[in-house]
Image (cartoon, rainbow, N blue to C red; front, side, top):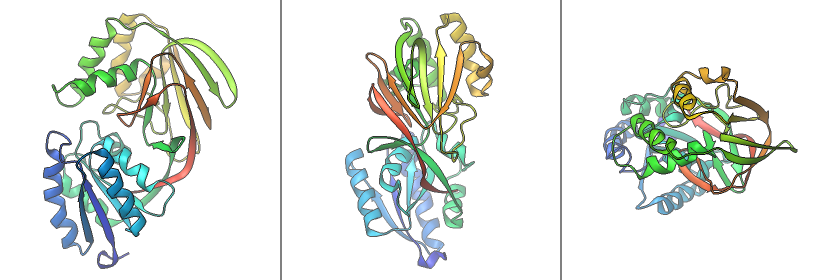
Length: 293
């Protein structure tokens, strides 16, 4: 499709990356228009307003919704375009930018990311779905969710170090949780440090918790980290960046189409956003998202 016949909605979170989102938008808007693309420049005052704007643009028939921000904006955009013919574009401008990592979209060069949008190459992938809500990356449902809660309350430092410090802070008091899991109809009861449900392989800025997850295989990857000592958890944590934790004896991996996760007192996170309290049932939604990449 030529630039002159395309219309996109550019949806920006101006506060992403402490203003990085607004700066990225200012850079890419003229680039996109110079390519002959009709651009709706959208900016919500809050997440609800932004989602309303995104859904209206999709209902109006834009070819693509392009989000300018972090994984939270990708998450929001996915709610608007899932199962539609509207593709999702990404201008990374957040902290973790895991979805951009999945597609090798430039994370430090907004103009190069905009050129991916202009090129209009696409890939269709699965989403994970719980009720009417979707996620792209990983659902955190244990120690990792508690870390997310703390990290989101922190204003310093930026980037991955925020998650590292939140991990160390929560580790002092954390105890294993009693889980009930239903994996494709089979019930498991066990104590574990965390359970993660992956559509993709990483979250939290490159933590490859669900190493091996494939975005378009019609399956979810459920990883269980069973009870381990706190020193062992600290030693294992750095291995998440390379996915080498998979050799640990307390690591367990299942590939399923549907999973129900229950544990007391846990609010799950997905794509770095609060997703909902447990218990939750999550299923794979094959081919539900088309990404400009």
